[in-house]
Image (cartoon, rainbow, N blue to C red; front, top):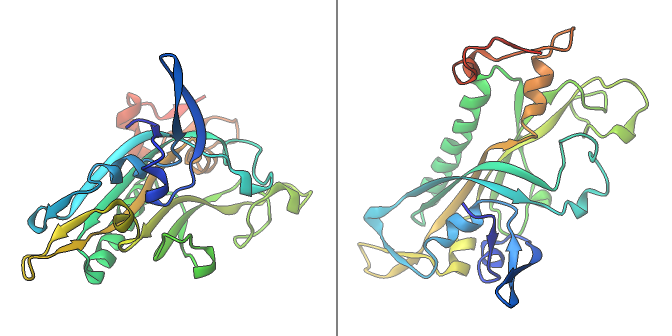
Length: 250
């Protein structure tokens, strides 16, 4: 998945792109470095009327993402928790305009992430985001937070920022995943519809997105939870087949 998009795509998906100039030939074009892979995935069906029998559309992408992180006010800038460029596995579902179906897909997408965390045996919790923390595009959002022993704050309800305490880190939960329901917010702006079999009329689809894995942030709980006293890291059992059978690093 490409990591840039034109000005017609990002705003309609509901993201705030970082503007960039990409030279082409003798001049430049207005392009945007995308902050999430959902921008490109949602743009696949812009201005289309899909057949109801072809729904849901389920997509997964791996892309490089870019964030200004201007609203972070310098928090969590040390280490790799909050950086300007990272790689992310993103899922997008486009389904019928049915609340029950939308909610069911939301739970299923959260389940994908929970399966990953459980196979890696990482402590985590689910956080229901309140309406004040939701962006204009979100109808519902669930964050999944992993326990990170090296974070500052001294408690599970802390935000883990280094500035909170001069003591040694005692651990805190940190956000690693997020799954959102958007109803028809994005699809209205993208003019993405499907034809209802009963009425024969086009109806705006519903969309959902889910962060399955974002690196290097996700390496924080993996490395900290599996680090040994000598500094080496035990490779989680689920990852050993992908690591040539290695059981230990360092």
